[in-house]
Length: 272
Length: 319
Image (cartoon, rainbow over the protein chains, first blue to last red):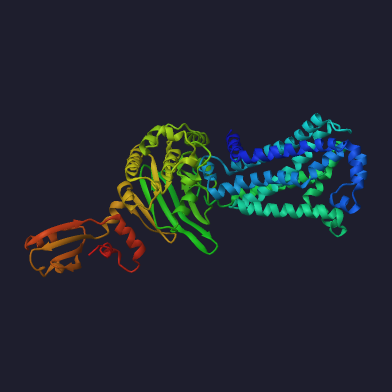
């Protein structure tokens, strides 16, 4: 009951920004099928990709063979590895995790709950519940955008609607991992700005490691250390599956962050 | 300290023993031992940085003591903080309230988190004079004083056994301050204990029965306001019709602390009879006696290291 009350308050605070990000994700994914349709469906896309020089294909991470094999589903999955999508989903998760603990400590608003007969674990559990709810909302928004776009534009090519479940799950796992790790930083800090800075730095490095590992063999050994290495929406949307290793790494990353944050928050001084 | 689960048999609501808080090499609070009985208004005084807020945060379970123990309402504040806070009303700083909520929604939210009905809400609202229409507005539109009033209502509305108030009247106008003081006395008479810090020493003097003074993290006084003032000398100002007679300083327990154009300022103890008997033999035009004020006592703790305690009180008087 108390946790539900706190979750409600957390989600209402900053709801405008969160809704804007959710809407942004939905609209962005909705555009993908429209673009696919305007290019003549899966075949048109393949032709287009083939016209690109190999270097450009590598930088754009567009493999004509992949497009040929995966068709419309493969093309739609590009919307989920696009930097804009990753920025939107990361912003929402980092923002919530930073704001809900470090931000509240910074402003002192956490004292409203701390001064009441509520354990720190309950206060923390509310943040975790908020993370789960937000992960679900963001991943569902992306899927909803894709689905609406496909239904509206009806682009040429095959898409198995059931695979949208796996797509939603893999997006939710990425959001959960980002949110959990950020909550860990947030539990130990007293200013949200520092948490946002740290999380952004880690995510940017993680993204570029994953990106350049594809095009520069020197960085290839570092790829397993990137969170984005385990985010494969193409596999989810084309094959309707999530690799067990990917699911394990993403879910455990989030879980480790959440548990480590709980241990810190339970013991730390709260100068409010 | 053992968590007894109920207030200790000597009726103490707050008990600290050797309470210490260190931040690295800095001691924010040092070896503070206190015992505060039920049904009193207790003032906790000290300048900025003396350790008052640190002590309050430890009592609320926000900070963990480096050493010593703190027991509130029979419960250890760190290991059983939830039980402590069930019967405590804590005044959060006015800036810590949610600016996106309406005043009434904020109060409802606080009451639901407390798990108790806000049965005192109307009484406190009347005392601090925050009107119903204002409660319907978002906090972002409130002035500092209005936010402080709302924070006070949120702290008191569930009628807790113990109130922990850090600078409760900060930002309130004098009339509301007086109303609030009357409310605290009313609650005290019903058995509520109040632990409050304040920079307004006149307010503390009007409201508190006991005070503790902290300095550089350590406790330097803990007694009733009356006893504290009794230890300090009164100042008598006498204007003579003619020359100042000799022999004034020969009166037991009287010291001359200032002299100007037929006017003398004398520091004296609690017994004024000897001075009055002497003055009866002289031609006095004017006589006034100023009892020690808490402000003088307080200032002495902070300004005076080397004046013996039995002579304190006269130093700060205007001459």
